[in-house]
Length: 72
Image (cartoon, rainbow, N blue to C red; front, side, top):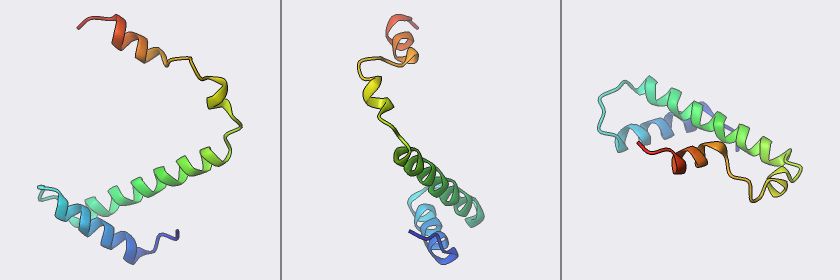
Protein backbone atom coordinates (compact mmCIF):
# COMPACT_ATOMS: atom_id res chain seq x y z
CA UNK A 1 0.00 0.00 0.00
CA UNK A 2 1.41 3.37 -1.02
CA UNK A 3 0.93 6.20 1.46
CA UNK A 4 -0.25 9.17 -0.56
CA UNK A 5 -0.72 12.61 1.03
CA UNK A 6 -4.45 12.40 0.30
CA UNK A 7 -4.76 9.04 2.03
CA UNK A 8 -2.79 10.24 5.06
CA UNK A 9 -4.92 13.39 5.23
CA UNK A 10 -8.15 11.35 5.06
CA UNK A 11 -6.95 8.93 7.75
CA UNK A 12 -5.94 11.87 9.95
CA UNK A 13 -9.39 13.43 9.52
CA UNK A 14 -11.02 10.12 10.51
CA UNK A 15 -8.75 9.81 13.55
CA UNK A 16 -9.55 13.38 14.59
CA UNK A 17 -13.29 12.73 14.21
CA UNK A 18 -13.06 9.68 16.50
CA UNK A 19 -11.19 11.52 19.24
CA UNK A 20 -12.60 14.04 21.69
CA UNK A 21 -9.60 16.29 21.45
CA UNK A 22 -9.26 19.77 19.98
CA UNK A 23 -5.73 19.16 18.72
CA UNK A 24 -4.77 20.54 15.31
CA UNK A 25 -5.07 18.46 12.15
CA UNK A 26 -1.28 18.41 11.79
CA UNK A 27 -1.03 16.44 15.05
CA UNK A 28 -3.24 13.70 13.62
CA UNK A 29 -1.33 13.69 10.33
CA UNK A 30 1.86 13.02 12.28
CA UNK A 31 0.13 10.28 14.32
CA UNK A 32 -1.01 8.54 11.13
CA UNK A 33 2.49 8.76 9.66
CA UNK A 34 3.96 7.21 12.80
CA UNK A 35 1.39 4.43 12.77
CA UNK A 36 2.08 3.66 9.12
CA UNK A 37 5.83 3.70 9.72
CA UNK A 38 5.40 1.30 12.65
CA UNK A 39 3.33 -1.07 10.53
CA UNK A 40 5.96 -0.98 7.79
CA UNK A 41 8.69 -1.84 10.31
CA UNK A 42 6.56 -4.64 11.74
CA UNK A 43 5.94 -6.09 8.28
CA UNK A 44 9.62 -5.96 7.34
CA UNK A 45 10.61 -7.58 10.62
CA UNK A 46 8.06 -10.35 10.06
CA UNK A 47 9.37 -10.89 6.53
CA UNK A 48 12.92 -11.18 7.85
CA UNK A 49 11.96 -13.46 10.74
CA UNK A 50 13.85 -16.73 10.60
CA UNK A 51 11.73 -18.62 13.09
CA UNK A 52 13.21 -17.05 16.19
CA UNK A 53 9.73 -16.81 17.72
CA UNK A 54 9.29 -20.55 17.36
CA UNK A 55 12.72 -21.08 18.92
CA UNK A 56 11.72 -18.94 21.90
CA UNK A 57 8.32 -20.54 22.48
CA UNK A 58 7.87 -21.33 26.11
CA UNK A 59 10.21 -18.57 27.23
CA UNK A 60 8.43 -15.68 28.87
CA UNK A 61 9.67 -12.14 28.65
CA UNK A 62 11.33 -11.00 31.93
CA UNK A 63 8.68 -8.32 32.42
CA UNK A 64 6.04 -11.04 32.57
CA UNK A 65 7.84 -12.55 35.54
CA UNK A 66 8.16 -9.19 37.27
CA UNK A 67 4.47 -8.44 36.76
CA UNK A 68 3.60 -11.80 38.27
CA UNK A 69 6.21 -12.06 41.03
CA UNK A 70 6.48 -8.53 42.35
CA UNK A 71 3.62 -7.16 44.40
CA UNK A 72 2.60 -3.56 44.12
